[in-house]
Length: 90
Image (cartoon, rainbow, N blue to C red; front, side, top):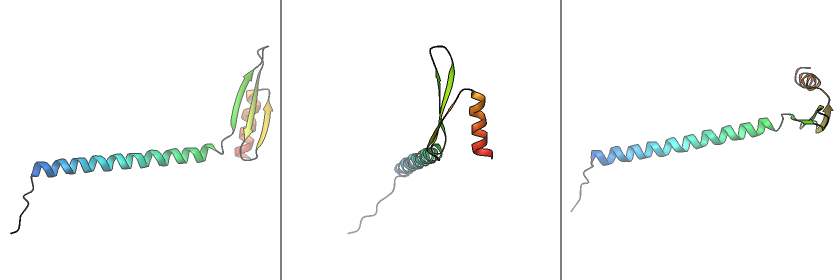
């Protein structure tokens, strides 16, 4: 005796919707993971800049360059901007 399974169109459409939803979630996760990895790789080469203000209200900047592994100190924002321009555009 053989059995023939009759497919229910509603069941098939529900399965198809669940499958599409699952695939959408997988691709969304893959996209988010790849963006995170790219951002982490790019950020590793970006200089880290910290501004501090002393008790007298004077600002200074500490800049760490991960490529050269050097730290530089500046007394004005203009000097920091000049350092960045020299680093990237010279």
